[in-house]
Image (cartoon, rainbow, N blue to C red; front, top):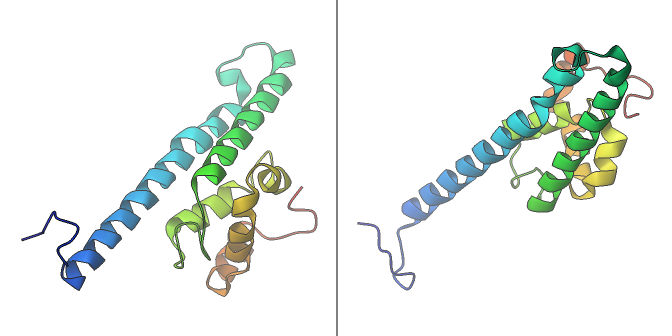
Amino acid sequence: MLALDPDVEQPVEIVDQQERWIASAMIIQQYQFVSSAIYALYWISDNPSRIIERAEDHATVKARLFDRVARCWELMGAQLRPGSYLLGEDLSVLDHYVATASRWSPGRLRFYEVAPGLAETVRRVDADPRLTAIWAERSPFTQGWER
């Protein structure tokens, strides 16, 4: 039985399981934030005519959407205190997702500006040898890619 009294020592396996649940919940929460608050905006920015008829307004819409993306990165950066990776010392799918999405418009330089606390982490993910083949195949690091 799990003791609810904080003064009662709990078995290590229960504490470990609780920590894993918390870590899983945090990954899901942040992953959902990137998906719904950031990634969803690219559906519009990729083709503004989906919601704005006048072609002369498309550039303004895209600029505002990218400002919103930057604001979302800022909010995420204010919430997290990364270790080696976003949620601690282990690489997770969230790290790869953020490293990927932060390369899209408005670009990595803006990401570094608005979420400086996450900058070192995404650079670490970029350089992780376990991801070298994926980056080379899907998002090569070409000159000026951080724009």
